[in-house]
Image 1 (cartoon, one colour):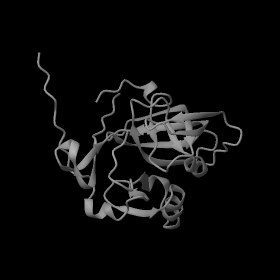
Image 2 (cartoon, chains in turn brown, yellow):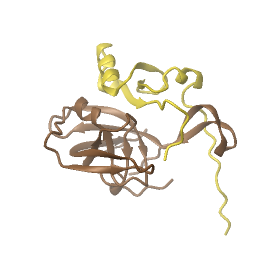
Image 3 (spheres, one colour):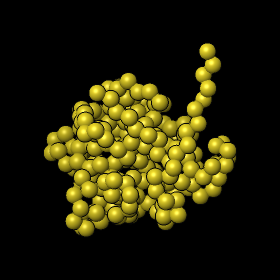
Image 4 (cartoon, chains in turn cyan, blue):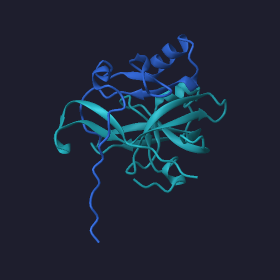
Length: 136
Length: 73
């Protein structure tokens, strides 16, 4: 079973210098389902595939949406390429991918929830890429 | 063997002018990605808005629209 996802073209307001002035940035945004492993409340997101990310990271708001209590969850810290650090909490979720042909794959994953600037989920190694052979 | 880089030319999946209205916000795209059915400052706001419209989780996909044209690192 394999999954293919095209890069998504995200329009930009200004020309992108590094891409010869084009007005969009192709991004590896892929649709996925994330569910609370305990109560099966789920939502669909578009997450960013990031081969440079150690963990799979959602915003803390996502834990609220799914009803995941992070009060006593294992804690850690994440650092981005800018050097800024943010606290994270870990919890188990169910992740699911669906292909356009209807194939479905679902797995349990321990992912991080970060109190960071609100942005799309980051699909890194732990929790996501560890389960796949990914080619770009 | 010479490996030549492949140029990826993609058409925007969504009209740029329309997307401009939602910079810095969270949106709920329809399941097929063709339209935005709800928007708000946080994913929680958008989700509540979508549910208030009678939509089910299968009907929409949550996504953050970056506020600026910053590159992602």
